[in-house]
Every structure is written in C-alpha cells, then in structure tokens.
Amino acid sequence: MLNNTKTIKIQSVISHNSKTFQVEVKTEVCDGIGCHITGVSDEQSKPILLDALTAVQAAGYKLPIGRILINIDGFYDHWNSEYLHLPIAVSLVALQYDLVLDTKRFFLSGPVSLDAKLKDVPDAREITDIAKRLGRKIFLPKIQYLQNLSIFQDYAVPVNNFKDVINHLDIF
Image: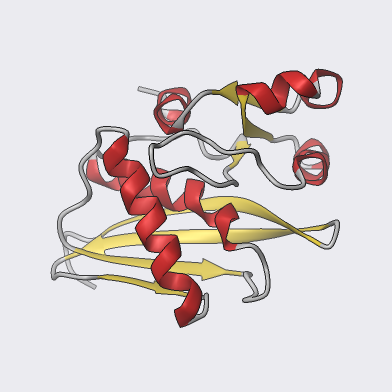
C-alpha cells in the first residue's frame, strides 16, 4: 500500500425479500487514476458509481483526487444496488475532506437522486428493525419519515438531501 492511502469503512443494510443483510462498503483513495468497484457485477458497478459520483458533485462537493477503489462486502448481484448510493457517496466526501464521521451510530443505506436528494428507502421498515436491534439509526427522506412517524420516530433521522446527511455525520 502507498503512504498516502486513505480508507473508510461504512456499514450499510440491504433488504431483499423482506430479509435484511448487513453490507460493508470500504472505500480507498490512493495514488493513481481511475475508479473501480468490486463486490458487485460489472453490469451493476457502472450505474452505482455514476449515481454516487453525480450525487456528490450535485451537492457541491469535490471528488477525491487519485485512484478510487470501492469494495462491497456481503452484497449479492440480484439485490437492489440503489441501497449502495448513500454509503458510497458519503465515503467519497469523507475521504476528500478528511471528515471524521460518526458512522458507528448509523447504517447508511438508500438511493440518492442525481440532484443529491434522498429518495424513499425501499423496505425502510425492515431496515429500521435491524437498526433498532443493533442500537443504530438510519437516514430517511423527511416525507417518508413523517408519513410513518410512529414507526421511525426513535430509529430514523429525517433529512432532505445528501448534504444534510454529511452535516449530521460530521462530528467536527
């Protein structure tokens, strides 16, 4: 490994057929050029990367300079890859700006639109259940949160967009 390599690991939760699974997103930036993703099929990797990169830029953040390596551990190709947008986008911003993020209390999961707004999290109820069991919270779009306030009140954080998530996680 190179001396100037930066790495972050973020825990995510994926729901598939009403079952939840924990997934780890490990992102690394090092010398070189390019952007590579492992742990998902070639067919899924390009849309995942493009959506996450576009959301980061649409929110007004710069992308890290160097070779970006993203490893998805625990993900299966037939699952909905939109769940990976938020953890990948957050990891890129954290590495670019050397942010210290409070990722131990949260699962980052869900789709981010190309204009950096959070989209409804599919199967949010199931994801909230695993967050409850493990003492964590998830981020939900404000409207989805308010529509199901009694379910999500103690285990979800309402946000409008990707920038709100970063502001909430950045502890300094």
